[in-house]
Image (cartoon, rainbow, N blue to C red):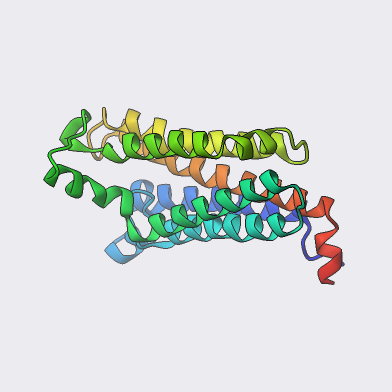
Length: 220
């Protein structure tokens, strides 16, 4: 029996993603739930709750799988690309729990660096984008090696794009809506669901890569 079945894993993750979306809509917007605690448990627009934990857990799994896969590689630049990617997603996992990008607004305001978005929100988008450009330049050979690898490449790229669209594009659109409005509810639902979906697809892509190295067979 292969306990590392990537197809079963992605199905389970997709079910969990959809379940979290349904629970968010039911508890926070459709049903009358008398307990604030229950509202908080499933609130997509809050932190320190079940959706935030699940997102952080998926990001941590991406880190673990990336590092494990890198150890199976021999080509220097390709190996390094997965090490860099792994630790990048480890940071995202910590960020999801510690609210680094949300709280960075206050740090940059003290440095007189302000966001053009309403209420000074979203300064992290510019900072993270600048860091991503620097990393892409510094590790350009690693990026090239990764893009030349065919196994799981398409699913990984799709996952990354969905993750970024959810985390950045949807949030920028959300600045246009008032809290509690239908538009804001839709934006939050789309944003968080896309982030979780992108993470799940990246996990699937990495499991496909590990399958190609007979990794699961070696553990059984």
